Length: 73
Length: 347
Image (cartoon, chains in turn green, brown):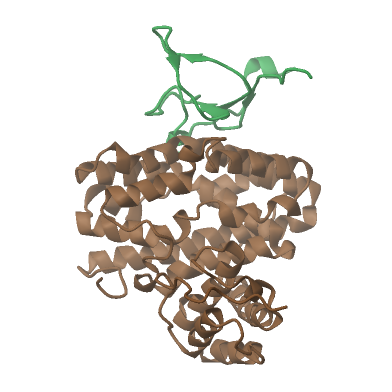
């Protein structure tokens, strides 16, 4: 049996979705409990529950398009 | 062989009848030997009497009871009635009229290209937060403790069974949409920890607010349109033909959850309730920010790619969620703004 991959997927105009086994830590290096198997990390900077997404990106017009430079040819 | 109902069924949470059809269905549930022949004709009569199916008390209580047979959500429902052809025939008559009204009244946007990206973008645009008065803002800023308790009573009709109507769709999907739906539902049901199941967390909220968490305890005080909100989900979930609609419904539901739940939590904190009561709302701020992404792109978007013919129903289900939940929310908000209780009668 193979170990499932841990993946981080950017969702357009939204958070980074993290799936798989991963340990989240705060700035002090302490583990942050995350019982959810799939987590959403704030990408817009305005979430009130960072590092998690709280949907607030929808209130500030946050957009990820055009795509970041490293995704272009 | 006939399997009879228990000699003394527990009927404490049966709703009161709201017309002749719901009265007859309650009798059929109390006595599973009673002949139900011709019930579909009486259902058609109830439809004929109804000026507005979504707000008709007799029709919506009847539909609620017929769906309850499939969920087993009320105590001591006779198992034989679940597949009783007369009851199923009546359900089909009511559903047909209900669906026809929804399709006639609900506007859906033009369908985009059936790609996950285009479908997710349209769903996020349909559900974009709007400024102005809303039930969530009223709860956050203004609602009294008694109004907060009324709010929980209304919510209990769906939320004590949270996620169940959409689970009907799991075996009706395949591949990516099925995996996405299960990914959402796994979290709804506690990610393997029954103590984290959302319906159970909501039951704790109700107890913390001094309310009865027995399913159905507040059936008699909620208006028909609150029952219509749940009945619509049950109809979309239980009819394979409507699997696009239940998927679109879930996407819109998740996309309009995180920000209002922040406001609901703020309202209960403002009124002095502790984290036992507010955990449910705080949990949904975080959970539904995940779910809305999966539901828009991996569930609804992927289903549109796999079965493009379902795209109009995906949009119909999303628009129906917004419209009917809007009706139910407005019922509460308008009553409170006029200084009235939002319950049918005070308990």
